[in-house]
Length: 519
Ligand code: GLC
Image 1 (tube, rainbow, N blue to C red):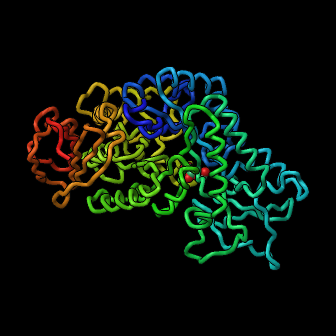
Image 2: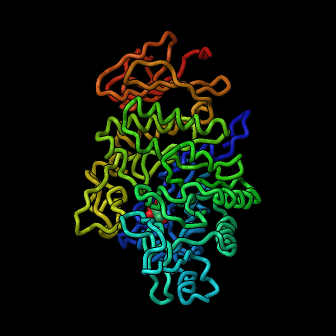
Image 3: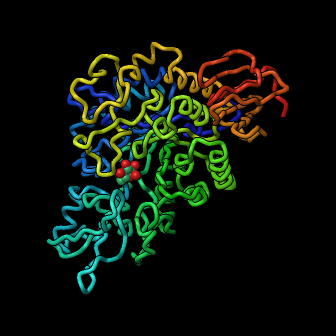
């Protein structure tokens, strides 16, 4: 996938597709997706045109946080299959030219992980120091005022058996690992080696900014006492850990890459996690994900992001949806906006991450109270993917969560049959991106445009594209002296025709100069 005249690694030119394994495809008909289900749909993903997959956790887990509570980092939970299924998936992906990244959850384990079972058994246990323990205050008080994610509960739980509190940034069933203990760092490096050895191309590192802690574990101002995203958001020691992780990845051949989840809402701080090119290859940067679909908000987020990353020569990432937030189709309120957003996501400079189902324009499922299962309230965006129109939508049994709205019309089958569908739009966008060095690797520059439009230009040694996004619900004009062909239109209108300066309501266009563009 290397670009002529450039030595860009695969993770800079790839479009990554996130799979939440429970909800993607179910091969054994138990209502929960599995690894064999993913393998069975790889040809569809190749047809769609993505380059790499990121799998959310499939490890052994009590599933209190649906796999982000890992009880064995080096085995597959039986609900998803086994290691042979994983190897078969990896081999099938590689045979199709797809890269495979997996989730690595280094900041906490499950409370059922043998490490924690051992650690809590006694204060003298060999692994006591693998987690973060503190005594109660003289009057039995909590060690400090930190609160965990998902609720306003304290980030500490008292372990009556051994008489101390332990720290958990998330659920009580997800005790934080203590990276100050060199054996923890070594053990988590061992996990990376285990999967590198098996042949994975990279990792998505879960809340990686959480691995380094303030050594004093001091209370903080009440308004900022929630661990993610405020407490230990950027501890100096985290960067030392990241440099050692990077050194490990760099000893493997084949550009193994890591993208880190940094739930910190300041792009300048996110940028520090790239180090001097010696920490993360890429970091998720969430401020754009939380931006409303409005031109000034997006312009600001893009400028702040590039302003933070460019001086470090750090490669951006872009993401609109994932398994933790309501889908952008739901947030933006209608399909036309979601279509325009797809053009935006796939034409910015950096690596785009798609979340399974956005290519179908799925909305969040409405989950009745009796069916809610996630302690973080994120069930809606995790609804199963409908594969076919027919009842059951390609799943053998009733799936673990309800279907998203309009599952039959939104199914893969229905949309593959309809050239005007959202699915075909994504396919055309991915094909256009693959065919254009400018879109994959080119320089990025905003162009002047009337209010309500954002327009930019991408350039890579002679290859050039213009992108126009109409954030408004009315037609706008962006006159051009040069002749352009409409290469992709978010609503399909005018494609392959000469651009006539008009941009429809919520329409987004990729324009291709018909003659070499002037600089
Ligand atoms: C990350 C994951 C989220 C999980 C949390 C704890 O934010 O994306 O799903 O609940 O970490 O592991």
